[in-house]
Length: 472
Image 1 (spheres, rainbow, N blue to C red):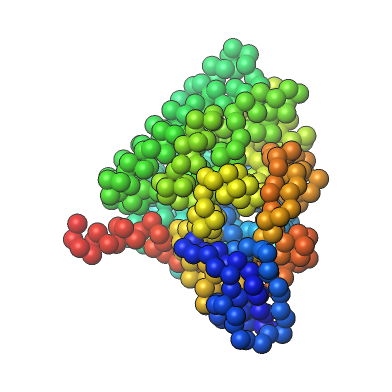
Image 2: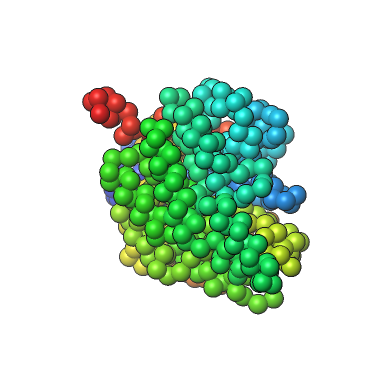
């Protein structure tokens, strides 16, 4: 089966031109102007931008918080309708089980049957034992090249102390496994939470007050020091605070392999949303907390200059009415996280590209190309080039609409971007050459997605390897 996409404006991380893409057997076989190939099917992309399918390196489809679980891969059509064709799921290690064993169980029982996008995995450390640290170097043989540790959430199973972070860095570095951390000071947060509850300030806004920017800044700098002592790369997920971004930027400028991402909601939403009446603020409870305009503008500057190198959704589908309300009288019991995978491209296009904050090439880099490189998927994903999977998005820049939960496929009862303007529209999406979205509507089926094994020694190892090669 062959397909020819003609006359679209092809955008990659490095260039933009009007041209054609010839697809054969699910792979990109040729890219150029006025391609002479004859195809079984021809799609005219005139007037539309042709982008590589997005790679969202930060999603939660299996997360459990205090006994409440998010919506799973049965809602992953929301990702592909939003232009994301590959997601990387965080799987929490089950107590008493290995990380790979836990992931294989979820893949076998759930993901492989339900996925409507391609997917890969991060392992999340929940049992920092000697057995776990011994397992880390074996993960790449299972197609897993990234692990995550939570420095936050004191008292919960997925909290890791400094010793665990350091041991993970030491175990991972020679195997090319990238260590990611959620950087917040767990002890300070725990103290502040108890103080606000003691004073009777139990509502969602206290979530932001108990997680001020400095708890993120301190933990980010501490994580950087731990990585430096281990002589290992480190990746800081969902950066929100100006000071944390500056710590990453400064460390990288000093030659340390330190990297970070931010997320779409931190670019456009304000912490005052947590003060909305009638418990509406609970919809915006995520960690780290939303910040102010000063921090948002610093993040736009950071992604434009490459100080942060990816924008993820941190998609986490808890219902407001049923699940968020478990914290009605105690903000510490509100499940953290909000849905967002469907709106990532729309937010970046509307409030980034169309507001002059980033270029289209930069959007592609943040949305697809660099996330694929970070996670060892760039042999197949994140770029429009010969030999890559034919994951293609046709984006029509002309329509204007309003984001609404009525049009969202994430399976929960709210959208944090409700009422915001969306400029442009995802028109068609191809996954490995198969049309999955047509005129903005999902036409694929469950199980169309497949597991993509990740390669070790992703982007975060490149500078380290270069230094070792020259004996630095």
